Amino acid sequence: MNAHLMKCNKALEERVNELEEKDKEKKVEFVGLEKKENEDVAKIIIQVANKLHMDVSQIEHAERVGRIKPDADKPLPVVVTLRTKGARDKWIRSRKKLLTNGEIYGTNNDNRIYINENLTRYKRNLLWVTKNQLRKTYKYIWVQDRKILIRKSDEQKKIMSIKSERDIEKYIENNLNTATS
Image 1: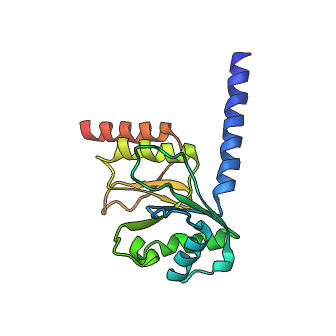
Image 2: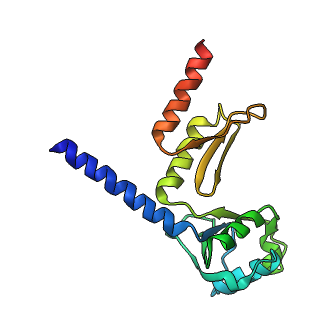
Image 3: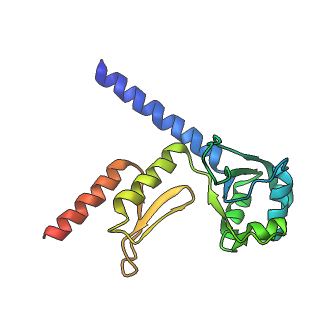
């Protein structure tokens, strides 16, 4: 009976994660976007869209998310919901253009604004664990289309995907076996 419940629980967790992933497929996240008193986040995102030459009609909704921490000096991220996954992909590609707060607000603030994929809590945590566990042995760790990818070096062209902490353990074990042989 216990094994059956564990199997059902695992299936439910996977289903919830799939639904959360589906919810994120049209969203991008802005990190480092300065917070102004009485700000209108939607207007700010329209300014960002114009700077990046994005179609503002594709913006559905924008809001700051997360809990305000009293001692935090960083502004909360802004999550933007777009009308299509294609629009989201264009925004993600545009992140190569360096954008600063000064460019948006017309100030001398040269703090960079980052455009990231909006990850589920599970994926965000898995990315954090991946970076902490594999940083020393893998040169490249990144997210592309909400998938966590790793590559060992410039010479190695093979890109591997991390889907769970078991994958991380497997790559650590492979590195240990390679180092001892």
